[in-house]
Image 1 (cartoon, rainbow, N blue to C red):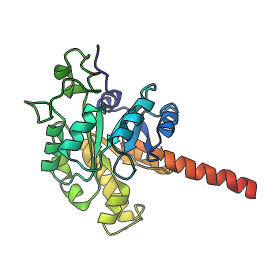
Image 2: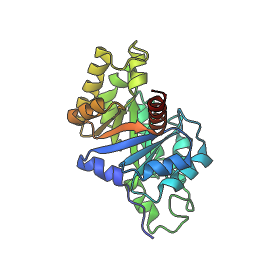
Image 3: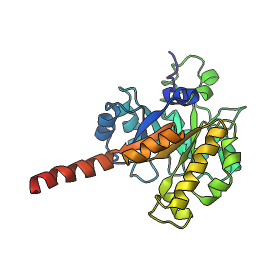
Image 4: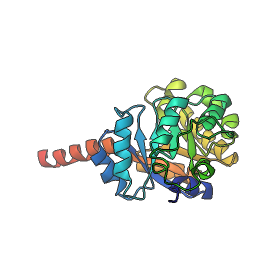
Length: 254
């Protein structure tokens, strides 16, 4: 049996823009609906959403019938979390609050089998189709994608070293935490924050890595894509439901 191919990793390596949807509702039904909507990738959130490991399994199953590639964000960039998420079948991880090259190196090591890294070895998991993938250990590392989040002043200061880390496929900006770190809590539109984010995108691209960002306003998303961001989360399940449900109610109230 062949290994599942990581379509997002391949697209980012080609420099191809990938549009994503953030999933925070902890609902496999919402995951399945969004998976079939035409997005290139989906972010299944475990940091700011009430998802645990069994929930993640259900989300991955719900998305598996569609081409949208599932990305998982664990609550922390911890080797145990990384191991468990990879074993359950996640091929792409978005790791929060990376603030040093050492943290980036440790994240990559946790996602790679020995001798290239320190990932724990299992011969029978959902990732390798329960032992049915031919040459699993020869192929697994090549289909694993590690994306890291820059969302603090410390992360920006260490950005060049983080982006230069071998095995890091892309760097994703967390606008809200980044704004808070620069003293603009709740205001990522502040000129200082916007300038920092533009600088991050440029430096990541200069390092030859994919740059990503969360931008739910359509004009912002298009502006960041024009600036060189290649993986952009343009909406979320919660955002769509809260916005559209309120819009319908207003139309009838009016």
